[in-house]
Structures are given as C-alpha cells and as structure tokens.
Figure 1 (cartoon, rainbow, N blue to C red):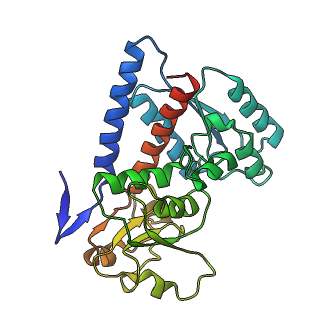
Figure 2 (figure 1 turned 60 degrees about the horizontal axis):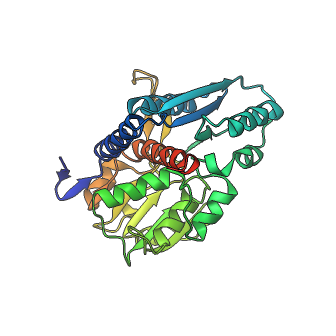
Length: 300
Ligand code: GUN
C-alpha cells in the first residue's frame, strides 16, 4: 500500500525491499530446486563499532531470509593489515564464496583502499573496487554500490520521473555520492538527469538545493537539509543514518537522517523516511549484487 500525506508520497523502503527480497527468494529457491548450491556472501567485520555491528548483522539476517548462505568473519579492532589481506585472499580463492564485503570504516592501522583493491573484482558485491567503479563510469555492466543501487530501485518502484530533471547530490563519497551522480546522469532507466554534485567546498549550497527537482542528501550530518533549501514538489532522498545520543531513547541514541524530515516533508512530492527508507534498500542492493556474482561466477 502506498502512503500519501497531503499529496506527499512516503518512499517506503520496507515496501520496496520486501518486493525485491521476495523476487530474490523465489529465484534462489528455483536455482536450488534445479540442483545448484545457494548463493554465498562472506562479510568481514573488524572491531565492534556499534553501527557496523548492526549493519553487518542485518546483512547476514537478510541473506538467511532469502535462502542465501552467509559467513561472518570477525576480527579484533587491533588486527594488522596483513592478516585481513590474507583472509581476503583465502575468500577470493574459495569457490564456495560468491561475494565478499568488508564493512567500512576500518581501524586506522589498515589502509581501506588496499583492502578494497584486494577483493577479487568478480566477488566485489559492494562495487567499491576501482575496476567496478571504472566500469560503472563507462556504462559497462558492473556491481553498483549497494546504496545508489537501492535508490535506483526505489525510483523505479515508485515510477518517479527522472529524465531531464535537475538532481542535486550532496556528498561525493565513493560509497554513495559519486556513484549516485553517475547513475542519475547515465542514459539508463531512472537516469538522464542533469546532475550537480555538491560537497564541503560548494558555494551557495542552499541556492543550488533550491533548484533541485531531486535532492539526494548523503553527507552524514544529521538534519542538515532544512525546509528553506527545498523547492516545492521536489523528491527528497535521505541517505543519512547517524546515531545521535538521546538519553530518553531506549538504546541511548536515535537514528537521524541528513534531512530535517518534519519541516521538509510537507514541501516535497516524495521523501524517504529515516529509518525505513534508503537503509533497507542498501541491503536489497547488496543481495542483488550477490546473486549476480553467483550467477556470473557459476556460469548461470
Ligand atoms: N559502510 C557504510 N556503508 C557501507 C557499505 O555499503 N558497504 C560496506 N562494506 N561498508 C559500508
């Protein structure tokens, strides 16, 4: 059921991710019934960062829900780079593993880029390897980073018009902002936007945001986007998931998006809630990539 408030559509990630997962589960069952093994995701978690623990636990749980195998590899915060790289090399060689992800961020002693580049591109279900990023940039088939992939699925599900629209992306990370800007500007379904990418050095950010038909907030600053930055009728995609300390909350924190939802939502034609929006779609993107890796690597 689609939820509207005063002509504003709530872009419900639960609804879309459930539909994607239903399809993936059916396809997985079919593959297994035909005598194939289940797709297998290996996730590596270093340390015990609360948010990373939650994300990885959710990735593993979602794998199980749709019939994938998952392996969680845990390391202490203090492990050295060589140990982590050796584990990645082992998983690269393991034919029973289809997809590998290393949850970011990593502790200071480990160079993230080195780890990203150590993953076999054919198992790079996060789409962070330069080979995947390069293919995405050139419009070649590749693993799309899970969050932008999930957002594209959301635009498709709700049939939101993108062609010719001005999309403003706040944030230029390799995980979200940069791949998002490439996808939205590509000549693909749910693309063909004119894209402006903004960052910490952007002048007149508010004026640029006011020109956005589609605004993607991916800067990681709670409630940064306010009502006075929104063009009436814009589509607003909130990628932020920040834990903000709150003694009145059961867990001692609340999850806040990058958008001040209560003041922004009434101005929009459609908006993602936090939680319950883009976060769930990130998992859907990862699961789709894992099935893709499984099929490609097993000649299916
Ligand atoms: N940290 C924040 N987002 C992500 C993601 O999509 N994948 C991984 N591996 N780490 C992250």
